[in-house]
Amino acid sequence: DADVTQTPRNRITKTGKRIMLECSQTKGHDRMYWYRQDPGLGLRLIYYSFDVKDINKGEISDGYSVSRQAQAKFSLSLESAIPNQTALYFCATTRNNEQFFGPGTRLTVL
Amino acid sequence: RKEVEQDPGPFNVPEGATVAFNCTYSNSASQSFFWYRQDCRKEPKLLMSVYSSGNEDGRFTAQLNRASQYISLLIRDSKLSDSATYLCVVNREAAGNKLTFGGGTRVLVKP
Image 1: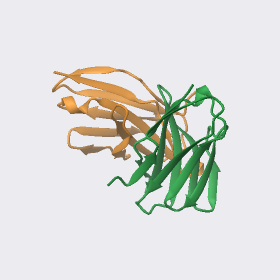
Image 2: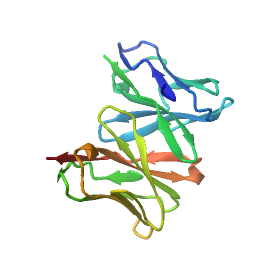
Image 3: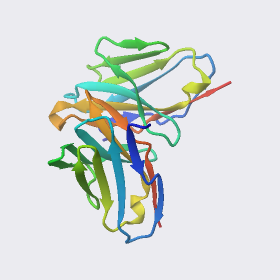
């Protein structure tokens, strides 16, 4: 079984819709992250959390929100999706500077 | 200027050949360095950490040049399975131990 899972794996939605991407991990790590990946731009950090009571903005948090429901769960929401949020989204956990990524969610906003 | 920059490639490499590419970073306070590998439409996975003295893992050799602020990755005896995108990653404790990723260098190994 995968240590970091993401749901859904693929999603097509329309402009203005609210979308939630979910991430779960069985690694027992405290630190969790959400990234988006766009061609040629690498991974950019959206939000991160060092424990259940700690939420921090990354470099591109506008238009996104997160919830850390438990140590193992970290969800990302797009309150009102727009086309430039079309991207590949990765959740990750980290220990000792090594990041463990989920399989990604491919989101398309029409 | 991006904090971490890489040549996007692709580097077209004959099977069995050696390929090397660099990554430059702009913040001299960067402390930890890594290479991640990403296959098409898959998640990135840690390939190797990069140490000041340089380090080797099988056919892969990583080097760090702090004076010129770049790291390098060399792949010897390239295999078809080495075809992937290689991401350069930099960490600064002062930035809350957040990792900063380069855009990736694509390597295509051909028979």
